[in-house]
Length: 613
Image (cartoon, rainbow, N blue to C red; front, side, top):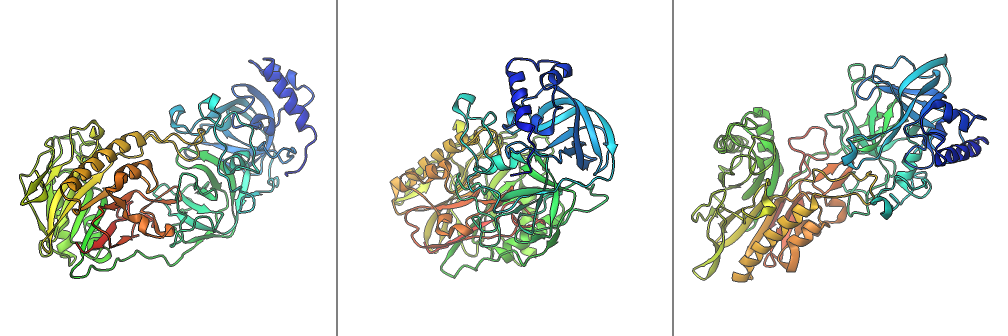
């Protein structure tokens, strides 16, 4: 409970009555008339739901102490009423949007008149919750140098274990109209503190510092802990309630933001207003920022394959093209050799054409691959050869003009590629028999490229390899992205994941193709791999595995090691390798070299599988 303010219940009741009877429908006079006994307080503006009961209404002389001033981005300041009510559902803080650089200072006691509104970061279609704010303000500074309201602690004891209430079916699944239950739901707890001065103590970093000067911590050090210090997103019900985004109020020119990796600790007290933004939801915008204490995390190195083991890997190299600095090529190449132990077959995603994002019709990636394979050789790796199918211009999504595609690299000293009537962008490879064994009609070839599932998306690349006399089919994928999906902090609960529909169709297409191979030879060695852009527990993965055609090999790892990507402090699976039933024994490694680190060569971690065909 925050400290009691006996007038609040009466004020809230009067405001609610005024709203219900339309008395607040247009003027400050009406608003004041409805609650003439008491001025409007911040908790009256915030109310007990996510939407202010005074949304769209003018307010006059709202009092508070300035707890934070933001001079960049969404410019404005936060004020907080030091005389809290007795309702934990109502926040005592609010953001005042000035547009221009604010002229107030932290510690000022102010009176603010303006219009109450609900600003939705990212826009109405984003699904994001809104920020209650006062806009078009007139500000009067009453006094300066005042003590700030005591910061409310956010920690493992205050944040509930349950993430969010189920959305109201009558409101399209929205939780906006539901009365907040801050002692029951984490999202309600954070919302009840929106705009208030809050603090955290020493907390583990679970999302590395990004280029936008922000990082993620968890205030629940025990919650779904990853082996290397992160927090694992292992199901749709494991949202990880302790995650919190950290930014700073000070401009970067004045105070550089600390560089942190997963597993580091943000020590001491971090204190400031609790904001909400489109790139992570609830964010502590630090007026006082703790100190980063570095951990011992280092990039992993996988075990080299044995002589009789075939090592197959997948790596999203993040829009690699010849205009990238040589340093990027060299760093990626070094990772292939030193961290991935020079796999025999390496499926690459996001290889761009020869002039990158320049949109001039170029589709060849010859220069990109020449530069990359040369860098691998220079790093002490094998003289990889490559096979790919160039896409049609502007038909496969990704960065406009980049024409990303999947590519096979293979070490000819260890494995051979069976070239069979190489396909083009629009020709589907099929399954046939050669000498009584399953074979591809086109190798390399594309899987079902005319299927609408692949519209404006990367088509799967299939190839036939031979290792120690055994044929291995490899299908490299880059499924549709999660673009357009709502975040975990959406006002829809559960959030709308609209991108899943396309990936489900893509998974069904690949699963059907694998079943064609297995129908010709149930003992065929088939590997489906790549940036699947979906979790190991998703409907996408289930569709890939349908009928026992494939097994998601990452499920062979302990849950604390199942991740290839870190997003908003959640370590999660996007990159996968799936095996056909004949591949009964294998070793699998999600090689953590990027996702946990502030310095990245890609935002994905590569995956490696070793087995004996």
